[in-house]
Length: 278
Image 1 (cartoon, rainbow, N blue to C red):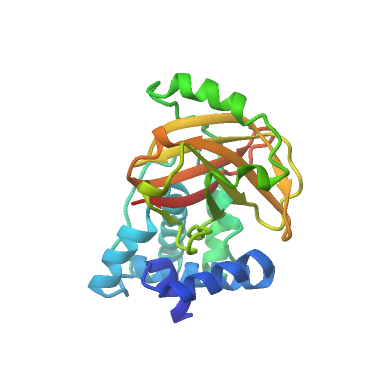
Image 2 (cartoon, helix red, strand yellow):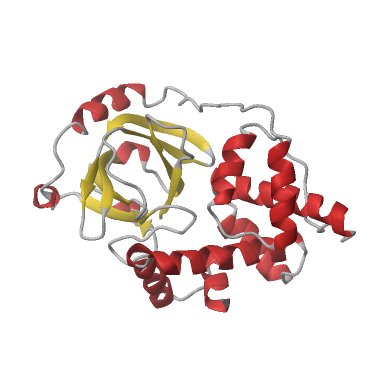
């Protein structure tokens, strides 16, 4: 578990990162082990059991997506409920945050792991008090509005033959709570100097997801939506399904990014794909 803890904290050597991410893609049972390790890390953070340096790494390298911050809030609420029932002290890092889109967060959290008995019972109580769902939708600021229209057309082309895109820089990213894996080294990092005019993104879908023909994506930088596309489709790969799309270099300046992938015909929680342009 220590190796997986270091994976989420961002301190695992590159060879270890590649080994974990390849196993996640091909071994569904290992994915459950990774999710349990992630749960242990969340609990250690909330109970202030991490060292000072680990705490800083957790906040810097782990809490970088809305999905992960949502998971932490849900876990904190569950622990507060469990603490009231069992008499345990609350964790030092618990915070009260806005509970908008609460039902979605509950559903998203359910897939993380089998909960411990006390937390599982608390979860049932929390879910029992859910009385509504708030939906939100981030809107881009309009800076790249004309590019969005152009690239919605570009992304209607057929991406089945990857040989047609050999001249484009390519990034392969793993979905879910895990960090991305770039084709150039498995770290989800790419140099701005190596980006071509158009970059091909290959977003690997979880094994349990079946073929869906209609997705939308949002590109976030510094937690703000800067670019969006609709009518994105999935393609077969050797492991299952993946999304293929083109993004322009104009929206990929240096910084940390998240691609949120949403099935347009369902209310499923979006999948997050993380990468860094250096």
